[in-house]
Length: 141
Image (spheres, rainbow, N blue to C red):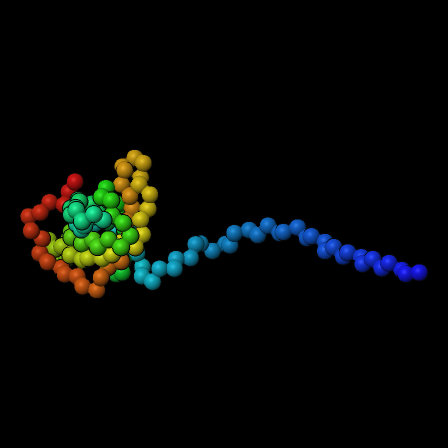
């Protein structure tokens, strides 16, 4: 006579997951450079994906030594080259009318704002820039 051996199934007891409360510290900023919440009026210009040129009056929402964030109506895509001409505040330029000319590449896009129909654009600056006297151009909308 042969005995049938049955193996007992061992079941692990499931322990309920503990709810972890959010950390007490604020959200960590992983950017390499400090961003200045400094609205700077200016003009953005470049080429759209099909080669059509655009030039649009805008305001930079924040800026750092490595890049800037602003909103545009134009349909730029990630990788688009954009040139910015920004009016510098009088306090930063010893009461002289100066403008910052800098180019960069689009690294991030955000959905269009439903009210204003503009989408957020983040660019990373190229190495070169220039600060020149402002001409009689008007950056106001």
